[in-house]
Each structure stands twice: as C-alpha cells, then as structure tokens.
Length: 82
Image 1 (cartoon, rainbow, N blue to C red):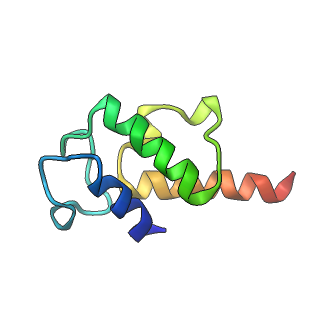
Image 2: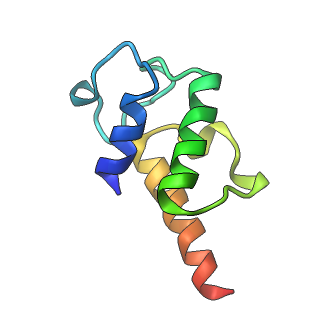
C-alpha cells in the first residue's frame, strides 16, 4: 500500500522527490496543493477500488503517507463489516 501511495504522490508534481519524504512527513508542507490532493484522492480510489466518504474528505486524511494508509485501511475495513 505504501508503495502505491508513493507512486500516486510522485505524479502530483511535488517540489521534492518521494525519497525525500518520510512516511509521517506533512505532505502539505512538502508542497501538496488542494488540486493535487483531489488528484491523489481520485488515484487512491481507483487503485484500491474504494470511495472516500464525505466525513473523510479533509486535510487530516491526506496529511501524510501514514494518514493516507490509515484512512484507506479504515475504508477497506468498513467494507468488510457491512
């Protein structure tokens, strides 16, 4: 999952390379724009066959690679419960 998220982030035209970004680094401080976060969200939805619910469409969900992984896992786990 981490590698997929990093690959998608690499396509977001951040001003730094992915090897310069730690898993817990603030992606917005690294240059992730609002537009790029929407592109990232769409890429994640396609890659993991999920849909972000409205309550998870916030800056906190995309703040770091760790935050994205937790959010995706939460969505995937909620599908198993239903």
